[in-house]
Length: 183
Image 1 (cartoon, one colour):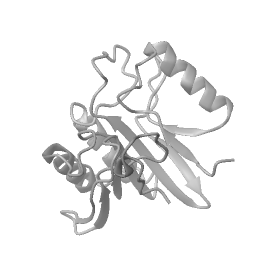
Image 2: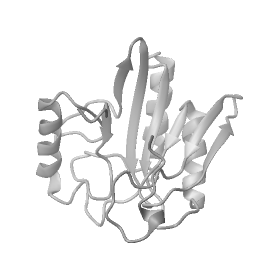
Image 3: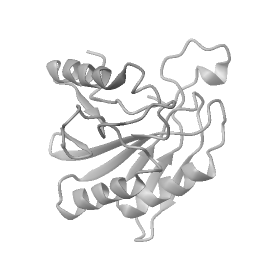
Image 4: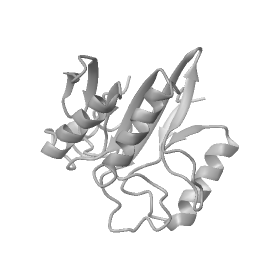
């Protein structure tokens, strides 16, 4: 009823309730037939992406997190943006090569909290994901809006990067921490 069609479950708080918390979150989302990207249940070997459709247009979603707040991902339930970038790139290429989707969007949870400027790692990996075939990178985590930019890939495609969309809903003190690029 909110108008949202998909949520990212990959973030630095994913393991706050352990592996069982991930499993229960997935069960709750599936019970409501709500699409999500990207975590998987313990023991699941499903692909590292989720595909949704709007009319005849298919979008593949790949979500990852920069950090897990010191927790260990013992059961391979989440993707790490930097440490598992090769797996993310492989998934992007697989989706494109097998024509599984019309567009790939990467949803990284990354960056330094309250910083308005993306880190060099954010810039590097956004471009790597786009050069691999993604159409857009839409980041979050810093709790403030960071720049957006058009990026021309090595194969001359026009792509889009939003390093951080800010906060959709937040009870934080300062106005820049209440701002959002969501529309």
